[in-house]
Amino acid sequence: MLKAVFPGSFDPIHNGHIDIAKRAAKLVDELVIAVYDKPLKNFLLTPEERIELAKKVFIDNPKIQVCGYSGLTVTFCESIGAQVMIRGLRVFSDFEYEFRMALANHRLTPNVEMLALITSEEHTFLSSSTVREIASLGGNISTMVPPIVEKLLKKKLNDLNESDTIIPGHTLRD
Image 1 (cartoon, one colour):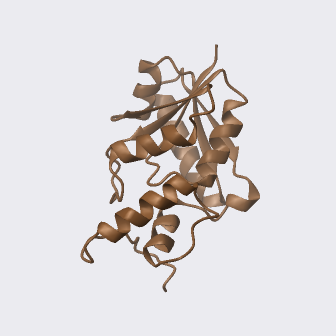
Image 2 (cartoon, rainbow, N blue to C red):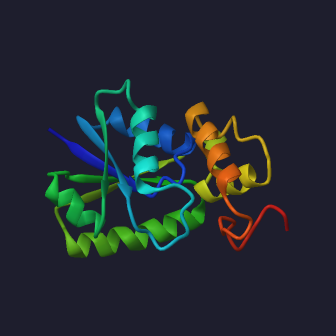
């Protein structure tokens, strides 16, 4: 049985993530969407919210499970018996980053392989930070995320104070 982990912060989960996960699930027996709880970035959504959204998105796919984790991703993979880590590649810079990470991960845990899937063309521009920024500026994100994600983002953004930081250093406003 081939078990894989698709790790990420998923803040929020978007159609690019969903596409990679669905395609990966066709290649393995079991796919675990692993929501990292403490990446070195500002969060809009809590770990619990991110996990709950991912669970709702994949509720009808019995091959996909969702859980949270912390620590090294390869250590998490080993702890649940996963042999493969799934990563998505959008652009050339993603390849360089993922290549270096795959080498480091292989050094740490040689029995967990990395499988990179090229994103579908319509999702190459998508990133969680892009979705957050467009939503925070009142833009339409309905083609980028499922309706349940759009609804929660709108609620969270309405509840934020103007001093809360969610916009990355490079923005669409520039």
